[in-house]
Image 1 (cartoon, rainbow, N blue to C red):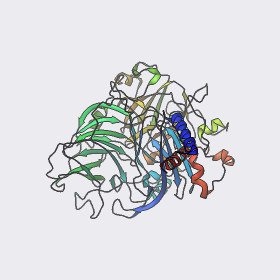
Image 2: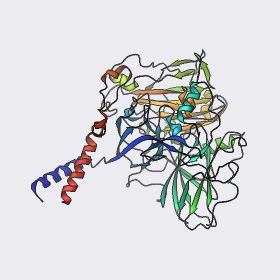
Image 3: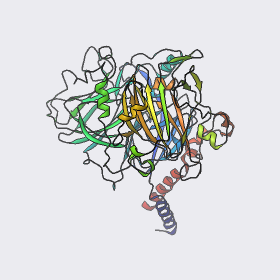
Image 4: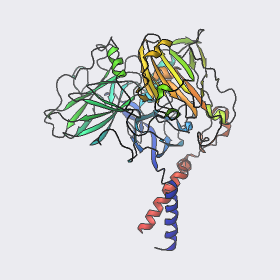
Length: 586
């Protein structure tokens, strides 16, 4: 080996030592339109690297993730990492209050650490109703090998994306909302981007491609299931098989058997499923609409196939029935209450103020957030929280803070519903750093809502029908309420959550129902450490995009060199490492 190769090897070793504690994973995403026919009708969908759904991101706790995104759509793009907490880097969250859109034909690189997290999540495009056209994919965070897991290692890991689907493209759906119309009933439910198996000749057209999951008899698999749809709650079940719930959005659960489970929009669950049935025939995988009139919504059902390697025939007969309580939601709420946090499990978990005993921590702020059916404001159909329909700022919130841009937002979001007429405002919540906030989500609409908060896993401490009152706290679970990032709120009911505000940034608090979100049912929680330092919140990234009042700071991106300029230092290290290995081989 000559001296030059030795020098390169020494350089490589020194770089490796510098980054040994925090390994990097790299992904390249080219986001574009393709034509697909998931329900038998050709339509424009959003693909990543030519695939619909997009590739699964698979990383390990504390790894640094670098995702280079090339926007080949005809409109701005942001990718949001649903449930990834973006510790110290709200700049990477990928929603309009934290990031300027990636313009068409541009590259932009996300870089963040999956700090102190495990679990099952997904990503999706957050702008312009694009999630209705696809662009989503699963996101897995594995535990580090030194941390024990509260169940035996499964024989396989399977990701399943379920969601309602329209054959109209996202621009047509968006225009319908802009014109004050309802979207109407979805055209079906997809499982991993595919339509239903033809279990019924009347409801399902011939020739539709359906999802088949192949398994080995006697093996146990971890199924990670996410509802990536627009607005429909779905009941998930597998014919003849028990679902052992093991994890939900980063928290291990007390393991319980379910024959089916309601999964609401934006939620993710992990199930352990043992293939312990005979192989006389394949089995149905079903995701059917919930909290609706099932007679009318029969076609809004996704059906896939569980295929044993030694199966002797096709699935046949009727689908396994879901819960029979379409007009009595008590079953679904009781099921949700039965999901409990495994407080004895090791691994990454929420750690409010150094204690896992969240029920004994003093609450510093209380917000009661009420949504209502859509209302007319200035001639436009809008949705609201506490009487305010959120108007997205043209300049990202924390970037405006850092660069001292005034008038971007107001820190006056009401703690209780307004009594006056509804209004459109960029009004956000002023969170207290290291505070412990109680949020009551009151759903006074007639349809199911899911709520998500970026940057955190919150504790679900209670839910019930009727109006929340101060006395409702007497029903709270103060010991083992599940910690997660998305919670359902039943029609005419409330859900209560507790949040430890230990992650500085500007964090989106929104409904996951895409139509209601698009019409304004969201706000942000601004959390600022008064003693600013790089330990609790990093500065904005070098490749930050500028828009709104800061547009003049944005330099044009040369398309021909976009990819090379967006790579950054960490990608350069990968190039150097590859070159070193090539030289050593020769």
